[in-house]
Image (cartoon, rainbow, N blue to C red; front, side, top):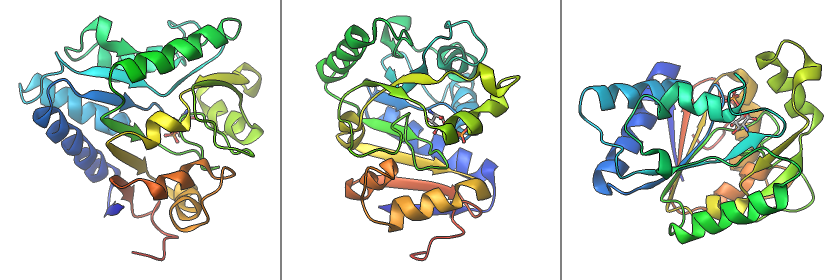
Length: 244
Ligand code: GLP
């Protein structure tokens, strides 16, 4: 694993965008795994800027998002469909048919999950996966639990996650209680993984994920096994690390 620590959020965002740009420039038809949350917003701004300056072409890129809440329509301002459109997908030249985000429909979850895994494997897997991290060490919506779940699945969000994400909703009651998330297999099988975190609230999650035991109680800890993991942190998120 390679850990990169930056003084500011702007610097880490620029670096993450640069890594993605290089991968797309190396492989035009990159299968790009994308994350939502406040962490990658700055990275997306940089990617849009690269596109606007004709430095980046998304026309052959295929995107696979990690997750979606159940019960929010794609037009809901807090849905991950909406987030991706707002921050990247409507602003660059990714082809609509190359955009993949799981549908947050609890009733049809079995079909949705199977189809999503099939789509990822038929595409040849993820080339580059971008990840944020929850304060409890979750990646995508792979929440702490007794096992690592390999496939795309329906998940009950933990109280910690509901509470953390309530900042995006007018009250805690509105936060969806379930989500559909990509499982651990496509993430760990990705050729390259970029893990991003900023701010003091992520310092402990980063510490236990990168320097603690590998356990499903800390889903991001599985990333220690990945051979090409690039960790991109600001100094606050890196504060508890001993190995740097
Ligand atoms: C959400 C998403 C994750 C994200 C995490 C952290 O729950 N499902 O993919 O990494 O929260 O979000 P933020 O970057 O806003 O702290």
